[in-house]
Image (cartoon, rainbow over all chains, first blue to last red; front, side):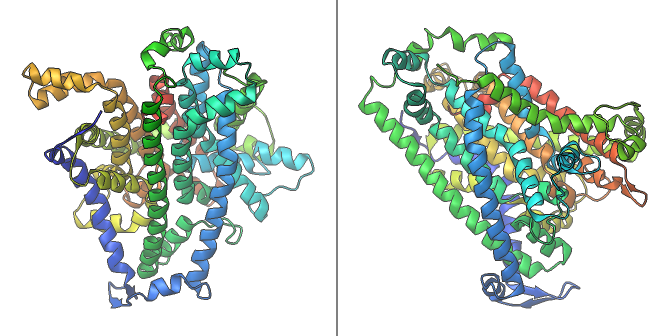
Length: 324
Length: 268
């Protein structure tokens, strides 16, 4: 189905364009402006050219050292949580009950952590992990493990990672579940006739069908973990030392703590640029994946049964709505 | 065929993992501070409602909830109403720069809030919106509007184009078609998009805290006040935390049948 070319569609997009431009382009221009200047307070600004950017990318300076260190920590953090959350999310999605009221119950409980304000997530884990009043900290210490996220770097890291897994694995799981639900029952029946093993079914049917949603999941999780601020800030405050200071925390420290507008603005721009590049890569891969799928479906029409035909022999898909 | 061996056990363990920290928060909110600090108890031995009572009677506390809900609702209304026509346009037409525009929108969803905190502060102070719900509602549009467009575009694309054409042949004007036919058809999609706008606006703290000082202060920012000279008021903090979970839980209950497809942004 080809879209028709119609330039008048711009009128429909205009409100969105204005609203987002107002809150994105205007502030970004301020940031660019600041990034070229230095300030000593009192609203006095001095031209600094690309000085901040040079300093930012040079690890021997204070600013550059802090930025690159927090960037490294942040990338490591993102990789670790992706490595845990994606497989775990798939396993949880595969473990979802098939029908009945338990489906709704599981969905609601899974979605619960996603709806908790981020500072409260931090508060929950701050309390939960404390050795004196928190269940987790108390039990671990009672078992003889010296666990204290305030003073020990490794404990702080573990706490922040477990907290993120707790907070966001559900997102991956729900996305995968949505992907799994779209698989017609006929595929499974065919696999059964062929005598396919459980693993073969996963590899040949379920994983390819989850491709698209997994891509969205990885994109969202990478981006959100890359700009994580509130949760680790509440739990560890970036400490002990600087061990859990991520890029956003460093940025807020410089901008709102020290009021070093020039440095903060330069950092913001580089930070934003990294995100833009990663975002663009994902976007390209995503659109290409969509095109490939379409081409495939067109070339072999038998492989992709029409949804209307496939849905009919599947009573298992419908009763879920009956629970409502 | 769908599921894996031991799925009940896996699901059960995972749900326990999710619920345990929340249970601990609820548990603490019903304990007296003396009990919290002195002994480790798995359930409140001397249950008390004193923390909740304090929040519901002290205006500086409960106004935080009202402030938060105010900007969340405002933001949801703005986001959905500007995103609907745009989603239709992206789904049905090709126009100059459509792909670039879509990517630009998406990139704003991904932009870190920390980058915008300070410029937003300057911008909204300059136009006199600082410390009003409008400032936070507009600021949250930066990530909610793109998201709403993205979700709604998926749902609009699910409506067959023949329906548009038939409506126009029947003499419907565009606005009338939009309100009378399209909106009812994608009502569930609008619900899902509203749910997501609500969710992301409700959980965000950094911008909400930066753009308010006194009269529009969100509950999340007020919670930091429990630290006093006498030490942490853990019970009060826990009670305030529990109360912030409730609106989210209520909203989930209403959209529970659409959660999965909604998280896939309407495009599975």
